[in-house]
Image (cartoon, rainbow, N blue to C red; front, top):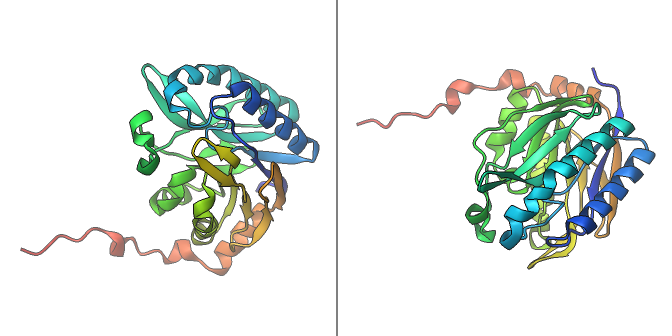
Length: 267
C-alpha cells in the first residue's frame, strides 16, 4: 500500500503558441509544488502550446525536449508528473498525456480518445485508439484529458484495471464550470477513488478558463480547489481511504456484468 502523499493540481494561463512562456510558468509551479512537498503534480491540457491549430505540427516539435526536461526534474525532485502535450507522429498530431514517474521514466502515454468536435479538435488531431493505466510510485493512475470526463466508460475501464487515482489534464471553459465540478465528482464517487484535476486559467484563443482545479476524495469531497488565478491546489491523499470506501460500499462485488450485456433484438 502506498503511504499518504501530497498531490498538486497546477493551473496557469496558457498563451497560444508561446512555448517559452508556457514552459516557464509550468516549471516554476512544478518547482514550487516540489518545494511544498508534492509527490504528484498534474498539469493542464496542451499546456506548452494551447490549441494553436495553424502551427500545431511545428510547435509539437518542442515536445521531446520538454519531456526530457520533465524527466530530469521528476528524477531530481522525486515527483510524479502528468499532463498533456502535442505529440507529432509523421504528419499527424496527437493530444497525448504523458505520465513521468518519480524515477524519471515515462510509465504512461495516453492519446486522447475523445476529440471535442465543437472546437474542431477532430479536424486537427488524430484520435487515440487505446487507453491503459500507468503504474507509478504514488499508485496506479487512470489518465483523462478534458472531454474524456463525459465518457464514464473510460473511467470504468481504468477502475477495472486497478486504478487508485484519476489524473485529469484539462482546458475546461468557464461557461461549463458547473459540468467540470459535477463530472469530476461523479468519476470519483462512482469509482471510489481520488481525482486530481488540473485546469487552465485566463483567456487562451477564443475561450476563457476559470481554473477551479480540484482534488477530490473517493466520497466526492473537495480536498482542495483552485481559484481563478494562477497557482496550486494541494492536498494530502491517503490511498487507504479508497480501500475503506470500497470496503464500506462494495460496488466491485455488487457489479452485475450479465445485466450490462447488449441484448439482441427479437425478430
